Length: 373
Ligand SMILES: Nc1nc2cc3nc(NCCc4ccc(CCO)cc4)[nH]c3cc2c(=O)[nH]1
Ligand SMILES: [Zn+2]
Image (cartoon, rainbow, N blue to C red; front, top):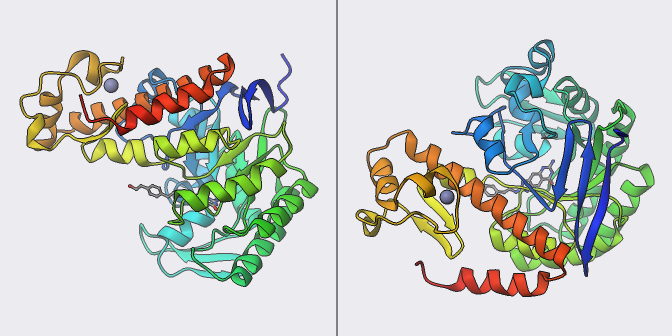
């Protein structure tokens, strides 16, 4: 079996695509949702549980792992796959976004960013080369370019300067990347919500040449309409056979609309963070299981779900666990939410393959608009 990294189309419906992402750590059907495993763990889940939800690829973070336990330690222990016992592909974000949104006291310059650890205040520096080297030490299957994600709203000139710096950094990342069969490096398209700047960014990155392309700079408060219009201006310019990854997105409705606009890969903390805060995702929207109305409800969270919470337990039991602040609450509900996200992506993927995406999308949107059962 050839281990070259590539995305192979299976079917299409307009701009939406179904296919397979072939990597050194296995093949993943797309569209795909990547559970977020920031510090080498998908919070409140064992990796077997993550696997059982149908996840194929998980996300890790350079920023967090470089601070703790440290990239060299993970390398010495055999890399992130061994460390977290996840045999499938792992995509690592490059750290820029996390520094700007997490690290206190950070200083950005044309060469990189200096920051203090949010854990112990120690001083650190990330550059395109250092971020790429750290992701290599982690043995990431997919390495992300080191970039800057500008806060929105911002003046077009500010967005343009930031994007052009990120494009210079992308060239440096490509230089530092160690090419291996089945491994990939993704360029990250920036340009805010300005169509011409997005086009300039795609041209710059495809000129360098990457195994895949991420749409960055979104899901930073611009709202769904501006996110979708930016996708409309961006994905058609990305080579058709390149995988597209929309960073940090999103709600079920965001995922559906973004697949319809040519996106193949997603990551978001929503299902896992919601799982820890008693918020359940269902085919009819979300539920706050701490709400008293669930206290004596013997039904499962969802009648369509095969997860442990839905096959063994009731809404009343989950309500009780969260009211009692029991660890099993976040465990079961994270499991359920990830299972819902994976079921959603499987359903969208099947609809593309069967040529029924339009009807399936209309059905999903009608369901989301309905009252809880
Ligand atoms: N390297 C890189 N990484 C990114 C990660 C991102 N993540 C987002 N959005 C996630 C936002 C987000 C944050 C928290 C929650 C939970 C709310 O309950 C949901 C979404 N946008 C992003 C943009 C970039 C980017 O340009 N470059
Ligand atoms: Zn469930």
